[in-house]
Length: 172
Image 1 (cartoon, helix red, strand yellow):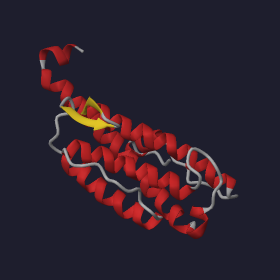
Image 2: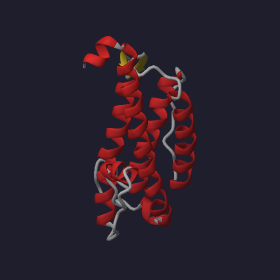
Image 3: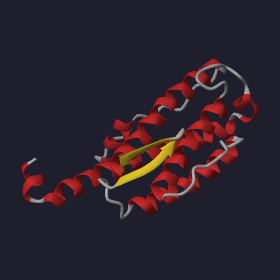
Image 4: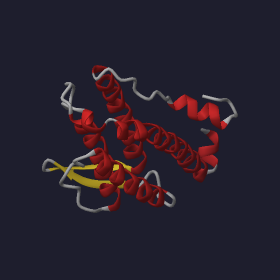
C-alpha cells in the first residue's frame, strides 16, 4: 500500500503482473481442455442438462462470452452468433486469445470501458473485465465437468494453483 502511494505506477505494475499470471493460467487450462473436447465428437451435442443443454452449448457460451468481452475492450460490435461446433469454438477462442494478448500488452488496467448490454449502458475497468472473464470461464468449466460425468467421461482437471506451483518448479 505504501509503495502505491509513493510510486503510483507500482500498483499498476502489480495489477498488470497479476492479470498476466492469471491469464496465463486461464489459457493453459483452456489448452488442457481442447484435446478432450475434440475427442467428444457427436457426444458434445448430447443433451445432458445444466444451464446449457449440452457440452457444445456450454462451450459455445463460454467462447462467445470471451469473444464478447474482447470486442467490448476493442470498442467493436459484439458477436451475434455462438460458435456452432467444438472446432469452431476452438478456432474462435484461439483468435480471441491472440487479440486479448496483444490488447493487454499495453492496456491500462484501470481504463474504463463503456459498453451496452440489453439496452443498458455500463462501464467497467479493464481489470474488472479480465477478472470477470477468468471467473466466468471457471464457473462454466465446473458445469462442463458435470456434463462430462453425466456422459460417463472423466473431465480434465486442473486448478489455478497448479500454474503457480509449476512456476516455482513443482509438478502439478
